[in-house]
Image (cartoon, rainbow, N blue to C red; front, top):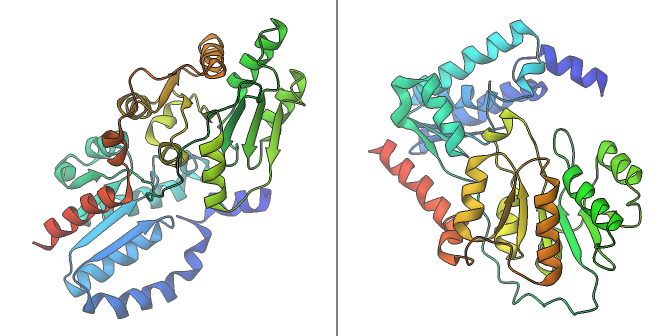
Length: 328
């Protein structure tokens, strides 16, 4: 891992840059027969190849960034000359594209500040869920254990620490619901695993093996409370975890521990759950107790119309409208 970190710090954009010559030939072959060139990252160098092909063949060009580029926290681990090269590449793409698409309104605003002359061409199209019908949720039986669930790996800056401390406090007070279990569908970071052990929650917190996506969604639907892990950092406002959209699809109430106002707005606007400030153990404790009682944790009723905004048909329509505009 240390070797990979060292290489990533030196190589501009990403090590898969070695595939650029082959990718360049493919896009050159495809571009003439298509109406527009659309590139998406990661990898970031795909945008440079797309920009070159679009100019060469006089095609409209849309750059789609699934994550920030120079604003990415990973970018700051690179050496200064490498960061300079990447910022220059980013500028060439954002100034050369007919439209730029990012996945959050917050990131779109940041890029508009960085490139004011191109502000009107920078759009936010959120990630989304594919509509699937899982049937109605099965209500929890009165004597059944309370199941709290997090979907995916907990790694890097993400943490379930606040949830663990809320549960440990409830246990000390004798208020912990009988048989409560925190299930993580994926890997827990060593930091979070050690913290759960230090709080005496070994029998409460379980890391389950990864499973088929559809099976994972069914597990989310049948849980009692879903948890969106915290990342208490200014960088967090530029990202929305993809599992947020899975939670919206599953229909199970969830608690989002976040300082990101955009995430809080989505949760509150859709009536899909509750928002807790990072590190607010009493607020997390209150949400867990309300879920255990079967009471609503949301500020407003679940709004299916607001939730459908984040479905793939609606997101696709918004992206198609951008394509239509640049083609005109």
